[in-house]
Length: 77
Image (cartoon, rainbow, N blue to C red; front, side, top):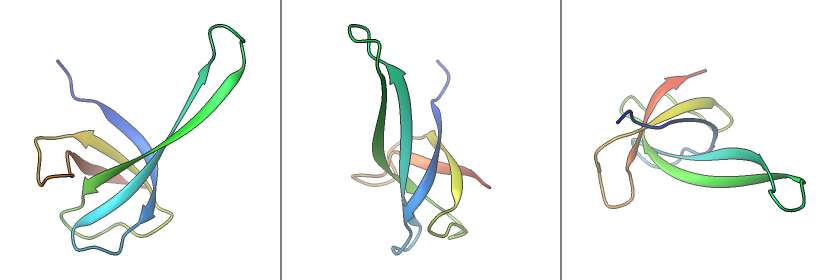
């Protein structure tokens, strides 16, 4: 089974080797046919400390690095 990859924006990059990434999900409601936008925040591991707030990044599923970090930064745009 392939690992999930999400694209999001870094909202917090204060901690050492850790970033908070906000991922936007857009979908259409089945019943009301309305377009809905939802944000979810993920804690991701940034090995090189290369991310800053506002950067667009790709995160990928990974084995747990710590109690809350189960994602790793793959690419910074």
